[in-house]
Length: 113
Image (cartoon, rainbow, N blue to C red; front, side, top):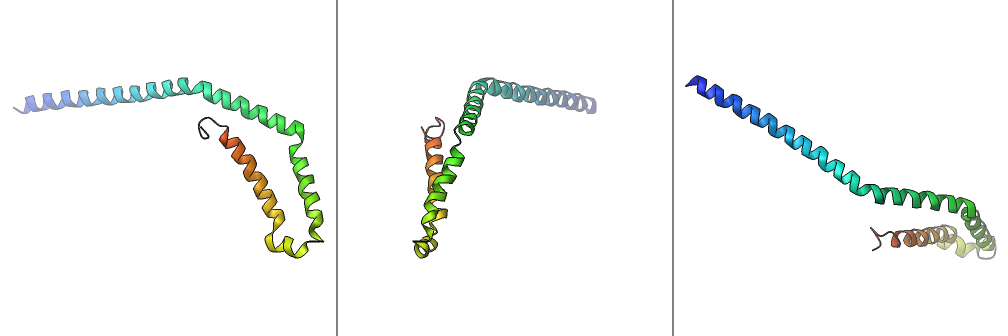
């Protein structure tokens, strides 16, 4: 009787090991399929991001926004109290950043629809 129980125990252990290996192989295969399917979108987004980065550097947008904000803050002497009360310099940079971010996010097909 003990030998039969040992034999059944060894068979169950072997089946469990095979099952774990099958699950491990299935996980690796599914990861491979996901990488294969997502390669195109990842490549596309990487190329678009590289192009946008090069475009922004070539157009000197950062320098233009700095000049715009510097020009607007030139009125600080005239409207000093109101400028400080409403913190317009912080507000302007925040609003401009939010508008640019909204534009970018709205044009991503995954997020903006």
